[in-house]
Length: 171
Image 1 (cartoon, one colour):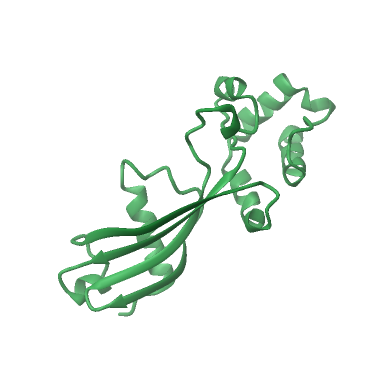
Image 2 (cartoon, one colour):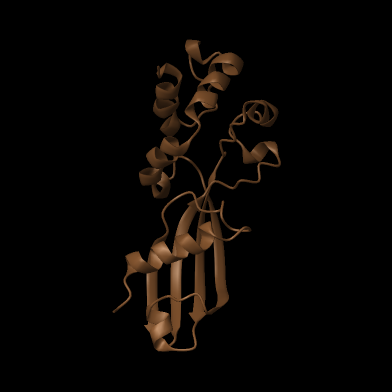
């Protein structure tokens, strides 16, 4: 059975999900840019969106960092588009084709681009990010700390204003 982009993407997502050190990195489906399987080796270029998760400084978050911590709402100031090129090697071509658990992994390249909310590359993904956000806590923070009932704060990027307005007015 031949490998497909979809099968390889799900396999990579599952690997990240089951890895204690990487499980929270992926905030979007993995997109396979290209892959090549030759014998017992698979070389894959792939990317996904990450919201950063670190939130150590004010520049990491859109809202005041202390207020964000108080409400448990860590909304990133920018997103990260993470691109990997990895090589996986099994002992046989059959194990490779079945994406078995017995393999070695070589990380060949890693690139992280920091993407502003208005960038067209992130456009398709903004709605998805809002769908996974803790809207109840975000609404409370916006109303209680930013007086959003009387308008959203001016520092919110234009692309996000309509979505944040929906959060403020949700039932």
